[in-house]
Structure formats: structure tokens, C-alpha cells
Amino acid sequence: MRPTRIRSAVLSAALVLMLAAACGGVAQARTVQAPAVPPVDRNCLSPDGTNLNTFPGISERIMGPPACREAFAGEQWVRSFASWGTAASSRGARYPAGYTPSEPNPMDDFLSKLEGVRVVNDIGTDREEAFTFGPEIVRRIAFADRIPFAFFATSPMPPLSVGPHTTTVFMSLSAEHCDGLGRVRIENCLPGGEFRYTGDTPIRFFPRSAG
Image (cartoon, rainbow, N blue to C red; front, top):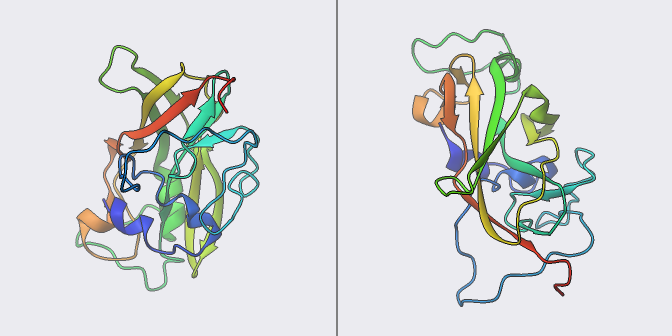
């Protein structure tokens, strides 16, 4: 599995704006500062200004990308996380020894095996709560530098209590999938069954009176 490489593969492309979504817990400020209050406007913008809500057609507040981890109390929210990219087609696809895809094109192989995800909020605490979603989490397939990427976002989830939380994504595949981009299993493949797809991403809900 290659979570680090897929996040940095094509940073300039609109659909890869989510590739850093699973980097929860990485500090970006050099000094301790008060958490930012979420904007009233729900649109989530990537560093290059791409509107991540209009990209897949989401009206709720998106949570997960580094710039979009705050919401107001009472708001439903959508969990988005790192996209998955594959070789463009079977032509030139490279696989680890012993791997045979179920579908000729790598992206079709991934989609045929994707069973869904389990989003666990506040994992390991007495507030832990899990939500399960099916293959509909794939909101859009788009290309960046001729590489197809599956863009993920859940259905709307209920609001959390005011304060800090974490949200973690586990993915389920019916069988092992390899992306066709290389022959190193740990970098180019996802295992069959359920596995942790993201880290414990920090998010926060603010009272409506904030700001």
C-alpha cells in the first residue's frame, strides 16, 4: 500500500486535491495558535483554489483535506480522503510477480473489488462511532497527467459535538488490487479484506456563535 506516494503524485491536478486528505495529524504551524473558525461558506478550496464541493457536486461541508477540517455545530458533513490512482490502461501496466488483475484495465480492476469503507469517528474513545458506506463513495473518476483517479466522498454524516474529534477511514476490497504503476507490492497494491486507509485525521466542530 502506498499512501505517501499517491498523495504527492500530481499536486497540480484538480482531482488530486484530496491526496493529502489522509495526512491527519501533521502540524503545519510553527507556533501554537487558536484553531481557525470555519467559514460560513461551506465550499472547501484546495491550495490552488479549486472548489472541492463543485468538483464532485457536494453541497454539504467537506471534512478531511488539511484546509477543510472545521465545521459548525449542527452541520452535516461529508468525509473525503485520499484518491486512488492507477495506470491508464492494460497497455504497459506493470504488476508485482504473481498478481493477475480481475479486469484488464487497472481502474476497472479496483472498482470491481471495492466493497466500501467504514468511517470511525473518535476511534479508541468512549465517543467512538462507525458509519459504513458502499462503492458509492466513488464520486468521480477523472484524469491527471493521463492517470485515472477515483475521487472519494461519503454520504452526509450527522454532526459531532462541539470540540475536537478524529475521523479514520477503513477500506474493504473483495481481493487484492494492484495499480499497474509498479511492481512493489507495499507501494502499488491494496490488500483484500478491510484495512486502515487513513490516519486519525483531526477535525473540530465550533459553536454557531463562534466568529
